[in-house]
Length: 177
Image (cartoon, rainbow, N blue to C red; front, side):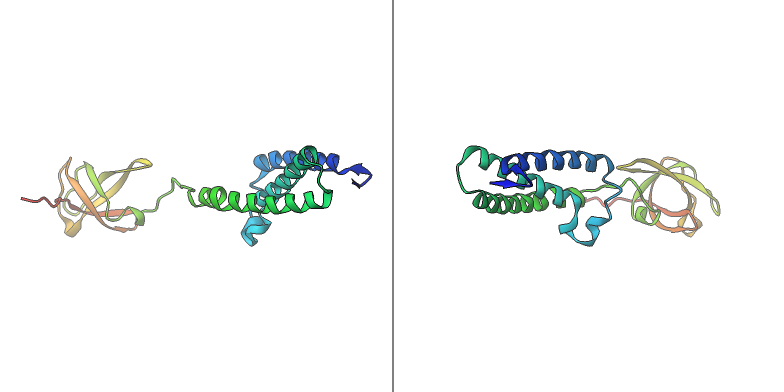
C-alpha cells in the first residue's frame, strides 16, 4: 500500500523520526507549551506526541514483521497506541505532576512548628529563633507569647505570626511518666 506516493512502511518510519525529533524539542522547550495541557489532558503535547510515536512505531514494526493488510495494521497500531498512551498518562505523567515539590514556604505554614531560640527573647522585645525544615534552617524574628522572656537554647512552639514576627511560647513536650 502507498500513501503520499511512498510505501506505507516508509511513511511510518518518517512519522516516527519526526515525532521523535518533536519529542526531543518538547523536552527542551516544553515550558512554552505547558498551558495547553491545562485545557484538556487529551491535548497535552506529551500525550499527543507519545500517541503519534507509538502509532508509528507499532505500525512500522508490524509492516516489517508481518504480511498483514495495511489497513488492519493501522487499526492495530492505533488501538495499541491508545492503550500505551493511557498507561503512560496514568502511570507516569499523572504521578510525576502530583509529585511536584516546591521549596517555597509561607510564614503561616510554619505555625505549629518547633524552633530553637538563638537570640534570647526579652520581655516586651524581640529575639530570634531558628526552625529546621526539609528546606534547611530558617531564622526568624520572634517575640514571647504574653510578653514572656525566653532564654537562649530553649525550644519554642510557634503560636502565630503577626506582621512577620513569630509569636512563640516555650515548648514543653508531652512525655509519659
